[in-house]
Length: 305
Image 1 (cartoon, rainbow, N blue to C red):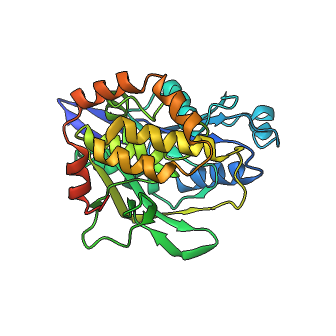
Image 2: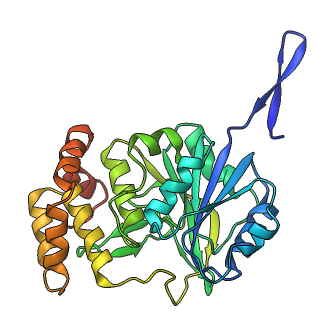
C-alpha cells in the first residue's frame, strides 16, 4: 500500500496516493507487450492498475495474459478500434484519478510513474510526457514535440528550464488528469486507424485551457518499429489531418491544410465524408468551449503555420 501517515487525534490515518491507471493499447506486438509489462512491474511506483486493450491482434501477443492473468492487469478486447478509440476504450474501464497512456513497446525507469504524475497532482500541469529515447539509438532523445512550418512532427531538444511546457506530448507515453481528459472528451473519437491522435489531443488540451508539460528528469525508451501493426494507407492519415484542422483551425489555416492535402488521390472522397459527418457540430461546440484560439497556440510556441 502506497501513501504516508499523518497524526489525527490519537490514531494515525493513512493517506493513499491517488490510483494511476496505465492504459496500453496493443496490436501485433510480438513479445514487446510482455517486455513492457515486465519493465513497468520492475519500475515500481504508486498504486496503479494496468489495462491492456488488445485491438485485434492476430499474432498471439496477448495470449500469455489470457492463459495466466497477472494481478492488477486487466485485458480488454478492442477488435480494431484504431489507436485513439482503443485509448478511449481503455480509459472508460479505468478507475484512476490519473491516466497514463503507454505504447506496448516501452522500457521505463524506476520511479517514472511517480515523477510524471507529480506535476498533475501538484497542479503544475494537466498533461505530462517524459523524454523519449529511441531504443535503436538511446542517445537520440526527444523532449516533447512541436510542428514545423508544414505541420510536420519535430522532436524538441532539452529545455532550458526543467520541467517545461511543450506544444505536443507524444502519445507513446503521456499522463493526464482524468478530470481534464473527460472534460476535453478524450482522444478524438472521429479519428480512423492511426495518425495525428496525440497531436490533436495536445492541441485540444491547450485550446481548452489545460497545460502540457515535459518532465525531462524521466527518460522512457521507445522501440520505433519498422512495420506498422495497423493496415495504414493514406486515406486514414488524410482523414485525421483534415479532421484536426476542421475542428480547431481558423479559415486561413484550414485553407493551407486543404492545399497541402489536395494532391493526394484520396482527398476528395475523404473530404466529402467529413463534410457529411459530425464535423461542423463538433467544431461549433469546441469554438464555444475553448479558452484560447489557434492563433494563440501558434504564437505561444513559435510555430509558423
